[in-house]
Amino acid sequence: MHVGKLVFAQLMDHLPWKSFTRIVERYGGDHWIRHFNCANQFRCMAFAQLTYRESLRDIEACLRAQHSKLYHLGIRGTVARSTLADANEARDWRIYADFAQQLISIARRLYAEEPFGLELKETVYALDATLIRLCLSLFPWATYRSTKAAVKLHTLLDLRGPIPAFIYISDGRLHELNILDQLLPEPGAFYIMDRAFVHFEALHRFHEAGAFFVLRARANLNFERRYSAPVDRSTGLICDQTVLLNVYYSKHGYPEALRRIKIRAADTGKSVVLLTNNFTLPALTIGELYRCRWQVELFFKWIKQHLRIKAFFGTSENAVKTQIWIAVSVYVLVAIIRKRLHLDASLYELLQILSLTMFERTPLHQLLALAPTDPSQPDHANQLKLFDY
Image 1 (cartoon, rainbow, N blue to C red):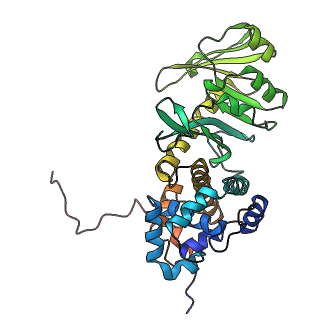
Image 2 (image 1 turned 30 degrees about the vertical axis):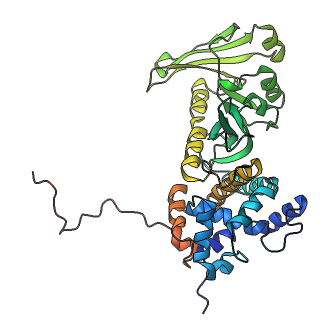
Image 3 (image 1 turned 60 degrees about the vertical axis):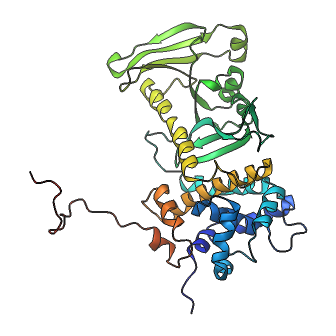
């Protein structure tokens, strides 16, 4: 008797498999493959992400324990750790990178009207990078220091969601400034960056494309003040100036005027100096925009805590990038399901529920629809008191 699909199969139904098939054909991922194709590899790795598996042996043991349900999961044949290891080693990681970009484009359309704390119609991005530290003896291709290894995850985060709009994986030695040359500026959008991205020639390219940037200035910025706008110091603003750069290379890289804003944080009392090419928004709004940059730091912390991107199932560059891109796909997939099913639960709560219910047959919308607690409901009359005052 048919009693419904497994929860894992319901999750996989939200993926655009026709797009995945076209991507696999583009890179020849299933060429000379008889049984364990790219779709099976993706399902196994996604299962590992959703259920917090620790190793290939862990994945194999869990799936073999549910051998009778593998067909209903969408996995054809028996899963062996050697087969999965060979697939991670040999299958082109760009298959899963392109598929993740397909999911990102779907998620960004769903979250296009999502508020992020400021009343702005324009798209707002936060650009930053994070290190994932590795063992040099196991990952010699990812040299970071003379005795350390790492990969760097460069991320352009759309703050409405938040959904990563652009991700680039490199070894730890690649500086963040090189990523600016790979971005295609979106006219009218805001790019929020830290002072590591101060490169005036690249910033002028953003300005010419009609995009706006807000970034923290370096302490040794050499400039000439042309105009000072009046500010209300009771709001935390110290100055709002129009400046020109003085240093030769900086001035030739960015010959236009810049807006320099100095603002003091109310909670810490520390001041920060911001540079932007937007002269229309109030200075306080510019300060709030830069404060929103912290969301990309929270994104990095979240994925490191809740996705398998710190312990890897393979040691080659291809295996590491494959695992990271499939982890990003799982994150975006859960975000898509959250929006499609109109769920109020956070992504963390959804992942925790899914991690324990992969082999159940409960409809997905019933499983993930958390009942809100009623704080006005009185405690049970038989509840004992711990302290009696």
